[in-house]
Length: 533
Image (tube, rainbow, N blue to C red; front, side):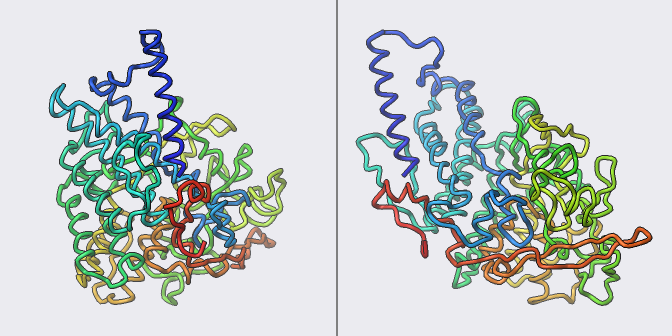
C-alpha cells in the first residue's frame, strides 16, 4: 500500500539521518529536532498546521460533475471516467484520496508522542483534539470513497506487519465516531480570532452527524435499522441544541464572507499565502481566458423550484419556457450563470454564437459551455481574473450548519417523524425566502422533496456525489443522458430555448465505491479489491 510503502522510505531515511547525527554529534542547523516538537506546544501546533494542508475538497476536484447535476467541460476532467463508465483500478478518479494515509501516519505519531505532561491542560487538550478530529476527517474521506479500509491507529515501524487487511465499513465508522467523540471532549467550542480555522468541538459533532447519517443510509443499512437513524438524529441534534451556529441570512454571501455564523469547519485561504486557481478555472469562458469548468446541467437547473414553491413541471407553477429564468428560487440566481445574467459588468451570452456560448471563438473549444450555463456559486466577481494570479479569496466550507439541519431532517424523516423533518427542511428554505412545504405533503412526496432540497441547497459542495450513492438512486439518475439548454437568438432580440440531450452517461454498480488503486493491491497481498473491478 502506498501509505505503508512510502512509510518505509521515511523510516529508512530517518534511520540514516540518526546515524549521521550520531557521527557528527550535532543537530542540523536547518532542521528542528523531532523530539522538540513533542515537548513544545508551539512547535506541535505548527506540526498540526502542516497536516491541515492535506484536507481535501474544493472546486478543483469537481465531484458533483460525476453526477447528473454537473459537467466538467474537458475530457481530462477527473469526473469523466465515471461519466463514460471507464473507471478501472488503474485510472480511478479521486483515487489519490488513498494518499491520506500519509497525514494519518503523522497524526498517529502525534497522538502517541505528544507530551501532555508539559504545558497547560487547555493547550494540550486543544492540540490532541485537533489531531483526533483530523484523523477522523481523513478516515471519513477514505471510507466514503472506498468503503471499509485498513484502520491504522499507530505509526508503524519496520518490525511490524505492514500488510494490513481491510476493516469492515462498520468497524471504520465506529473508529471515526470514537475519534470524533474524543475530539469533541477535548476541543473548545470556539478559538480566538487569531486561531480561526482550527477544528472545534462543534466541527467534531457535525462531522459525526454526517458519518452516522451516511452509515444509516440504504447503501450501508440494507435492513433499515432504525437505531442507526436515531444515532444520526442524536448526533445532528447535539450540534443544533448547542445553539453555536445559525443560518447566514444571505445564501450567496455565505460562500464569500469568510468565517460567518453558518460555517462550522472550512479550509482557510488567504492571498498570497495559500491560494488556488479555482476562480480562473471556473469563471465563464470569454472573460480574460477563463476556462469555464464545472458547469451546471439542465437537470440541476430544472431542480430549482419557482419562487412560489412549485416545481417547474407543475401546471400551476407559472413556469414559461420562453422565459425560463424568471421567478425562480433565489438560490438559482446565487448559483447559476445563465443567458442574460449580469456578470463582471457584462450581460452573459450563452446562446449559440454568443460571446460565451457555443460557436464563439475559443482556443479551448470545450471551455465554452455545452450546457448553456456556468457556475456562479462560490465565485466573487470582484476578484482579479488572470492566469496565474490565483486570488481565490473565499475559504472552502467543509461543513456548514444548513447541512446539519438537513442531516437532522433526513434522520427524522426515516424515523417516521415527518412533522419534525418538515420543520427543519423549512428552516433551510426560509433563509432563501422559499415557501414552507405544506403539512399535507408526506410519504414519498415529502421524501422526494427533501432529496431535491438537499440537492439545490448543497449543489457542488461535494455532498451530492455521495448522496446519490448512499441513497442508491445513482442507477436511475446516472445511467441516462444529461441535458443542455440550446439557446438560439431570434429576430427582434428574443430567444428560443430548447432542452436537448447533451451527452450519454454510464453507471455500473461497482461505482458505489472507488476501486482501490491497483498499485496498492500489487504491494499488499492482504488488500482486497472492491467488487466488480
